[in-house]
Image 1 (tube, rainbow, N blue to C red):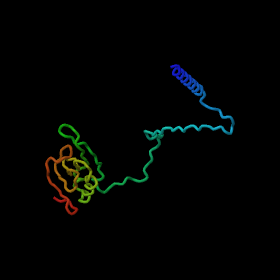
Image 2: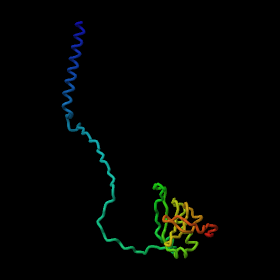
Image 3: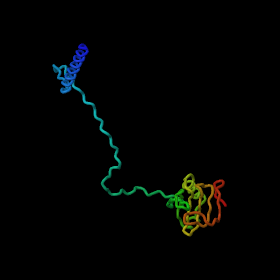
Image 4: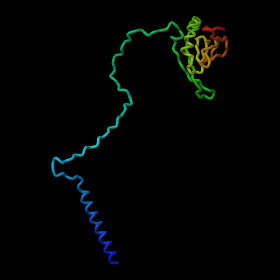
Amino acid sequence: MKKVVAVLLIMSMCLSFAACANSDNSNSSTVEPKTESSKVEATPEPTVEPTVEPTEEPTLAPTETPKPTTEPVTSDNPLMNAEFETANVKSGSGDVIGQRGYILIDKSVLEGVTNEQMIEFATSCVDDSGLNWVSIICTDGTGVCFQGSMSMFFVYGTMDNEGGITDAGTTYMLKDGIYSK
């Protein structure tokens, strides 16, 4: 038993010396080299600065608005010159279920529109627009309605306040490049 106690004492002493040796080394974190030529300098790790994307365009000091050098191009098509607007289409309960497009013109303007001008309007504003319907609304309460963004036909008649036909007068179909009844 004496041997066991002696071994335990020796082991605890060895552990104590080891702990003391480690604590002495922990106080000095750098070791000075003996000569200048053997001196090794630690290179600091590079720091990466986060990049911040600007959230807004920089604002510039107000300046005089430049005058256009050319006049805006206007079409000879009165339907294309009218301001094309969109509005929500709502269900009976008030939920938005789509959108509609329309222009407002005088009836005399619509009466003077050629077949080519109507086709240009239908191709540019109706085809594949994704709108529920597109209307040409005249100031007298009549007009033209292209249903379902399809330019193959339109209906002329009395309109409601959303550009839908309420009293259908005439349906025009596109065949061989001409709208006819």
